[in-house]
Image (cartoon, rainbow, N blue to C red):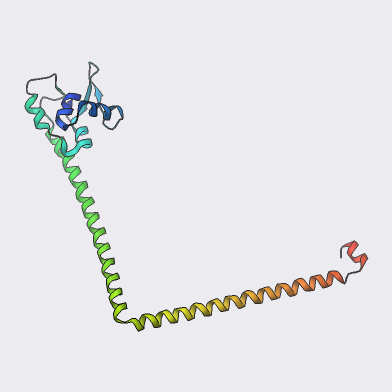
Length: 182
């Protein structure tokens, strides 16, 4: 696979970003690069597409760079349009998938909103049904609460009786039984 590599200056022209911005992105590892034989930083076209996307205009550099090897170095004589197209297609597919996911989420939200609207309309048209349901639920909760309170009281009463028996037994022991521990 062949690839086209550009200098920082060429990358600046292609993306419309300043040289300082490109250099800052290289230093921060937001944008990857390779060093050529002379130690100059070279940025792959696909890397420019990955970071800057549609802001890249490679035709500007192609027109400017005809016959000039100082602005751009290539590992093949012609630009790798197929690689750029593949990257673009991949990005387009990702964006389409995201749009589809967002559309599904929007549809779910709209369905939920429609259900709430229907419930509110039903509530306003049938207030007695709602009131009846609320009264029944209130009575049910009150009954459950009373049963739980009775259960707790019964348990406490049993525990108090057991403690009273144990206290009475302890008091009724003789001094010798208390010393021996029986």
